[in-house]
Length: 125
Image 1 (cartoon, rainbow, N blue to C red):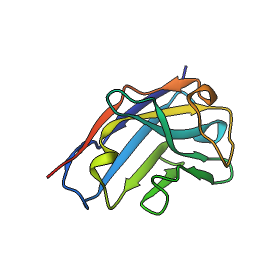
Image 2: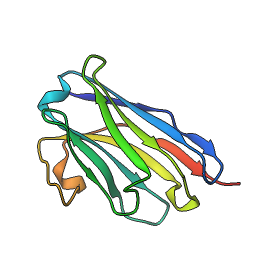
Image 3: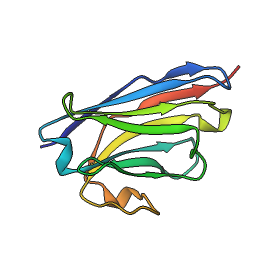
């Protein structure tokens, strides 16, 4: 059974940065596509970014491309989401997820099998 534990959320001012971490246990990163979704109140869950750990292929939503960077540390079995130039519209609960499917153009909840508990990111002055 794969377990995902997020950390690193918090309150940040517009233009600031945060780094989210997703610690994975129960399997090697190389066996999964690991990524991040976010959900704001009243909105659908949105695929933000993912990485296919076996070859480093990535996906970014248009809304975060150029500001967010996903990376992985295979030795620590951890995936990171570096978020820069944060905007109020980035405010949401961010969830780490894992699954077998990768598509360079899309990242949907249906592509995942495992979820973390979520971490709140609030961008506000």
